Length: 113
Length: 114
Image (cartoon, rainbow over all chains, first blue to last red; front, side, top):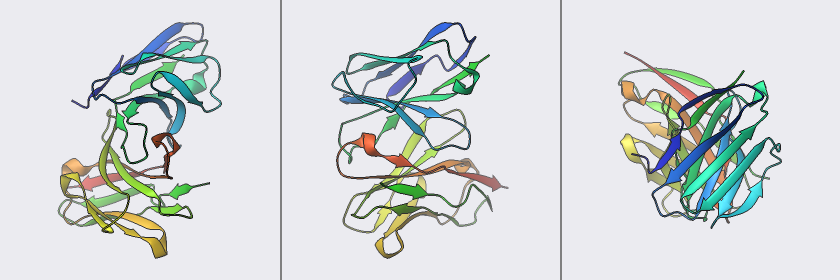
């Protein structure tokens, strides 16, 4: 049990679909993150939320829309994705300090057809 | 800007052999350094971290890492590898401030032969 739960584990969607990824953390952390992991590329930070407020958006296309209703839940809404968006999407949480390690979920493997 | 390099994309070792995974960083001040491991189908799990103090840090699963400022390195070691250690290993470096400033390396995939 990692303390960070992501659903679904796998998702296949067409380019015109709308879907959402969900993340829940049970660690009492105040910061939550979305990362994208593609083959042969470094982990890419997409969004950061601190106490429900978005504090970072690293030039992510608008077809990705995050939502953080409270400090324990994080969503990533997906709309009209492209095949190059196929990747492993990882959610993480931490206290918002550099000395607080990130705790990751097991990820959602997304395939866009 | 900070950066981290893991020069070895793929390493194969025999079970019971020793292991060293390399990590070099670029950052002016003393960085925050981390090693994470990712098993197939899983997220990343923290192995160990270094912020200050003793430059040799112990982590979980029998791993250790040594911070060498003169070489800008933070190499991960294990005296005797087990087959279950086969995974991908990521080094990460951060500045002071928030965890969102962490930069990850591209990873080293470890294969263990029996």
